[in-house]
Length: 58
Image (cartoon, rainbow, N blue to C red; front, side, top):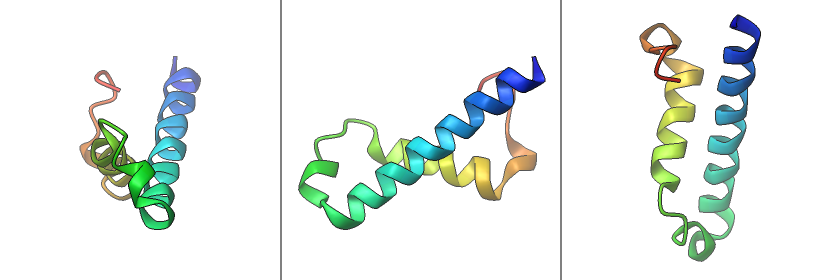
């Protein structure tokens, strides 16, 4: 179970990083994402505030 959770969290980090890059380099495309800001926010939590992550929710 831990490996699966780690893999899913890693994918969310990658998605959030991609959304962040899209926002920076192509804002008009980024604005078409319905939850782009949420993806970036989740990436930031997973990367910088790991102790607060509810692994069951992820």
